[in-house]
Length: 392
Image (cartoon, rainbow, N blue to C red):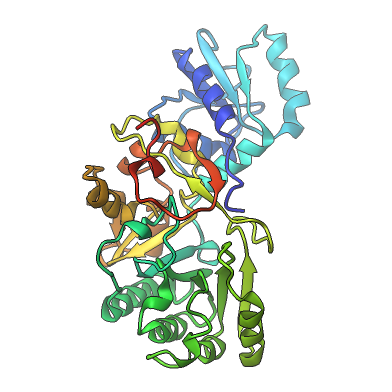
């Protein structure tokens, strides 16, 4: 699930352990440990090598560093992060103690798995790409992480730009990624909404297509300017995902309309766990305007390598960065949003290149205070800086 992220406080403790040692080793050299090395590389932590219980000649996939056995490694002034599975502890911990060595950090099984999961390039059958059809919205939610309530002038995605980008994504991916999500803002504000669904389905015949909406315009969309939206969703196998806000929306009427057309409809209160009837809450994603966030925080971000976003030919590892210019404009701020935060899919040489890029921490992560994110009861926005910054 989207909130099933590496435990931040354990990462904080691990990084404190690492900082105390001039030399550092990772115990284990399989896939999960290689992704742990990748995490340390991103965080500018030097690792002197892997330690294995027995001689291990398997080739390394991420990058080559020395391998040692416990019998041959020099552990003076060293620390060990134990990254191998818990089921091997009975064979490892006694041998460390036999050498009189106790300066090790034991990772939880959860973090071993989840750090690797976050930093693994997504294969096509696990790739999720989001696209905003409209940046503005008709609901005005506080703390929106797309900053939709801050958009001063309506913004509609150009259908030709969308077609060009989706054709390139299809070319790179062999016409298949697992999930494509058409969203906003409020996407039903776009008069050509049906065309976006049709183009997406024509290029990705086997993919899951979600259409994410607040539902305010759903009952009217049967007779929209661009045609019958309900029939379009039925014809193109598009699943409508409706977030239920406390706004007295006629959900039963919408459900009946979906049944009438045989369209797929999912209604839930919280996106993260898809639970129906759960009271909608908003998440505050505080910024550090000075850009001084410690690097290790990024891996516990539920946006990172989860809400992968395509915008104007560029792919982003999260859905905050491509819309953060609205924050800058609304509050006269200067969060830096350069091209190094995204990859141009039209210049990328392969699917593997873009999938690897979105596993990497980007400069904008310097602003996102993952540690202090928190939820609050849903409410309408006052469009004030305090919705995004603490202590102002």
